[in-house]
Image: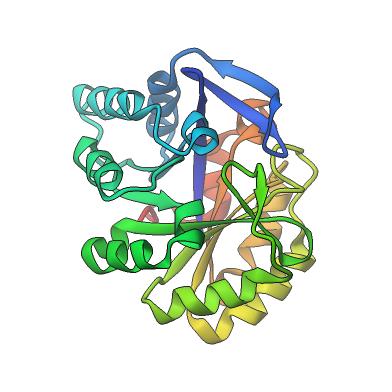
Length: 259
């Protein structure tokens, strides 16, 4: 199981938000590239970079910082750590720029739900360089546009996953908004139920939201056989609840890494 450090960028700084609320932030670094380099040196196979400014505005605002991370990695000779990038990516040009700068894949959120034609064309052209992120509220409701809006449907999650399977998506990022940034532990029962529902569609999950301890990671590892591929960890690492090395050793053998 992958353990994926998050580098969330807002106004040029590395921050963590409480339940995605822009007015409830904790700042952890003024230099995102340095933070990404730290996680790479500590063994991360994949780093999850989120342009929060882009997510709120609807267009990427921090591609320059993604470029900076890529340049620092090259200067340090780091080639085993990959970076995925998301936040406000809603055009073909955005996707191509992020990939050309150095992202191994691009995360599509709001646009994946709202513009199915665009999503299908992106998947057909870029294949597994596209990953869809689904931000989930209570009762399966999907949040959009930096979690500021609601999809306006009931339990939209299952029907959306069915659709993603039909168009060839093999994995998604699932964020539990109620848990994100809270250090309160993941909702294991809810996750188990979703994994059972998704099992017919052969879609693997990378989850985010609430990871607070090594015990949480241990409790999630048992879901690997049900399609859990990885966990995105943010605040717990920044607050020193455990080290990345400890999490990686618990989650997977040392030889395991990003695929």
